[in-house]
Image (cartoon, rainbow, N blue to C red; front, side, top):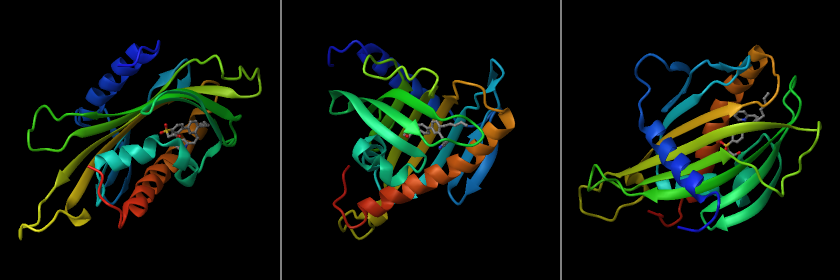
Length: 238
Ligand SMILES: CCCCCc1ccc(-c2ccc(S(=O)(=O)CCO)cc2)cc1/C=C\c1ccccn1
């Protein structure tokens, strides 16, 4: 593993997020707040210092793509503006490895809040499926707030959010009964998207909850559709 000061934290948080994502939404602590076809979005209403920091967990089933493809396009900064509609600026501050970056994002101002930015490391990895031999490997992409000497301190101009986000994908293949080649019609990708975003500064709780209720379903629908469109008619990446 690369000898970078962030590496131990990247390793720990990525694996913690993997376990967290794999916990179901049973137990009655999660509130279903949006549903669209296969996509189900849950939240927990929590406040930290009077700020709503509502953990979110979404589950979705997407046909015709693999977990490697889904997490690749989630991780790749080159395509982020094609699906992330609330992004205004993005800069890769450091390339730690080909699967690990430090990114600064400035998001569009969301009325009535002041404009926010997010500074985080981003990591993607394949996790061998230790429980089920003939299942495909699991892929996880994880974004977690960090400090970085290259990031502007932007006194007073921008409020910095802190976030931990993961996208965990499990691909399954239903091989064709006629023994023919596996095509995208035989692929199903089960995804779990988890996010905890601390808005970093005062936002009226009702306004923040309205933003999340509007933006998260839109975001996940748009992102997964983007990946389906990109992968259509392309060779499958397992
Ligand atoms: C009023 C509060 C404004 C919040 C501004 C804001 C901060 C952070 C973020 C955000 C959302 C998803 C990620 S990610 O999953 O890592 C993918 C890479 O971009 C990183 C950052 C968004 C948004 C603003 C809107 C918003 C809120 C949810 C969902 C979608 N948009």
